[in-house]
Image (cartoon, rainbow, N blue to C red; front, side, top):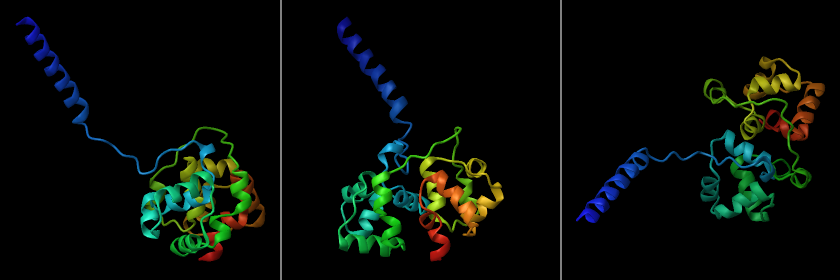
Length: 194
């Protein structure tokens, strides 16, 4: 009889433990946080993050497998001609911006001088017209203020680049290119395309 009471007690204890943890609900992140070395196509991921589009949603809208889209972003694969046309038309960028072969081969990592954190209010309060630059800040979890300080420009100037698609001078474009290690014609493609 004592054994049966002990088993009942164990079941009740496990029930309380499960209720404590399972009753909390599950929080699913919008984007998984990959290690920086895992991202081969940072430009494509930056555009998707700036547009708040999950990889699975892009796959669904293009009628391709999620595995294919993941391979484009994380393995740096270039899609077939048909899928390349579909993704370029859907996102509104030419192939040399979305799938730049030299950039995919190098996959350079940005050196972060100090810890930083991207603030969601950057997207909420102002329109974002330079999706690539905004998305790169999101991919690396960089604060807009921190990036402007690291590049050596005023935060208001950097925000103009993001929100108003203001094309900076060649000297400032070069500073941004050196920091993000992405060619300026890709970093500021939104300014020229729109």
